[in-house]
Image (tube, rainbow, N blue to C red; front, side, top):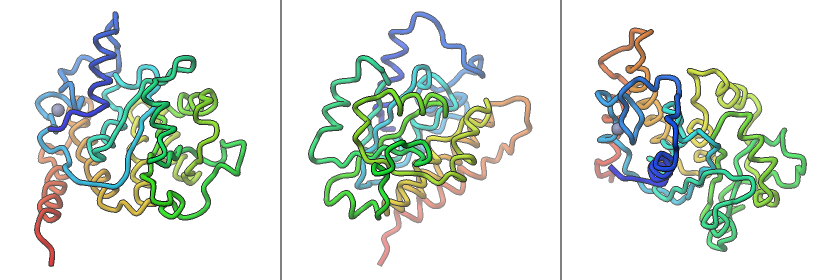
Length: 248
Ligand SMILES: [Zn+2]
């Protein structure tokens, strides 16, 4: 499997943390990389596809320790991925350098309803808007409340264009992050934006990978009776095989 920026961030934070973060489900013996119960680990199946997009996750305080986090699934799928711990006062130097790199077009993914300066919201097609530069999707990875805080209190994001996601999609995807068991938003938001960018393979791969994760994650819950035959994993592996067949 490919170790990526989210895994590195997790390791860094773990090395620094003095107390064990007591997330829900912390008693389960989990794989350090996919955060699924070790016996259901999905790391062997990590996607291996190419895309013409970069993703930057700005991760809220303890999000990196939450097994239900889905931001890491995006970096499983998009190979050029970055993950930075959010800091209001001491933003990461590498993050700032990327945001001002002329080779990239940064795009903050956030609902337009919450953007005061509507001129920032990109209303045209995304690909032409990027004008040959590589799109750098910036996703605020945390609860909805934390994402809003990051958006408001990060001066280095203030002048960047915003890709909006539909309000009904937000209520369906982002808002339910407040429910403990449905902490499943960041990847779903990325699925939609990748599709808007014309990155169809990345979008569909992430969608299937997200289903594989959710299925494996639910297998570690004892309260419910999950389908042990793992239909989502089977579906994912079948499509992966189809994708690798030469087409002519
Ligand atoms: Zn794993």
